[in-house]
Length: 430
Image 1 (cartoon, rainbow, N blue to C red):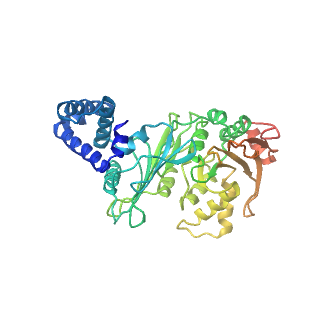
Image 2: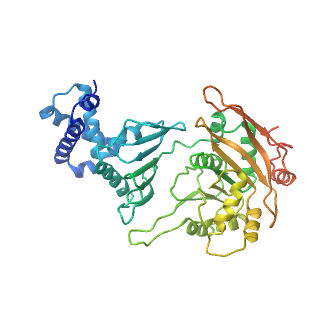
Image 3: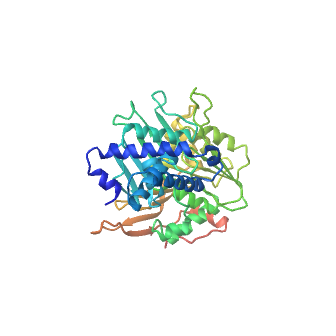
């Protein structure tokens, strides 16, 4: 029986388990040369600590089997060097999101499905220690005066923390991990779109159409935006703008910009809008905005319609049509007061194509709608569908299947593709 299982069946097992970890972690930190450890790469640090701890346990440790000792060594090193009980989840490549709802409720997402796991913190204090360790790596703090933190770890994960009094049931920690970037052919192989839809979108990117990727939370917008950006020509200068840097472009001429929150004195904030405005002075061939959330929408729309064509962005929305209204609403949040008709004119002038993604009941993420914006000036929004995903009935295994149905291209879009040498014929997916 494993150590953790054996202890879990004993009275006071959790306290005893914590005591073992605490005592030998302190012994380990007493004997380690901190300066020498700091010069090592992270994997080497772990190896050094594991060897030293094994020697300490061999000299005066409890009587344990080899498997139990290995588990104890891993727990102590994880607690001393990493994120404690979360380390095994971070080491699991299939886990894409870790959600901690207080010390005793931990959920993970694997392949689009969310499940509760047996992992738990020993106490609220231990969870706070883990949170402090996370936010300190990005020079942030979390306390009652600053109870929310949204940041990116040096290893690339996106982290959100919210604590009481805002979180009523204890500290909440969410860690989103990003796998290696997918290329568009890989998304085709996964069923996120079909080959002809990919060809259409590739033609739109090369023809410098402005494309907005919309969808709900967790629908795969960033993953899809990264795949689309992989089609951008290598000779072009690309500026990416994000709240937390997640895009992983492979082109040689990329400038990555990331917003910055205010410091503890409430100063020094650099917003997405600041970065969008600054990017226009950087001679970009393309601007890629990771997610449009506020007044920067107006600056982005103006850039798209005044010479910075071929730009890409994502926005939260429930459909391709809703994405247009969402952009108009966000643009109205800028410090420039404009009538709704003028904002509608900005959207109609700037956006060419909307790609909408959804996460299905089986956890799969796919393109469900590609539409061209054909309305002009201040008229009401009018979208022409180019591709639609038509689902079949949900099968007994709850696997969503269906087909991608193409529609004729509107003449304005077909003409632009033809002028760019990207003619695809009359339909998006015949």
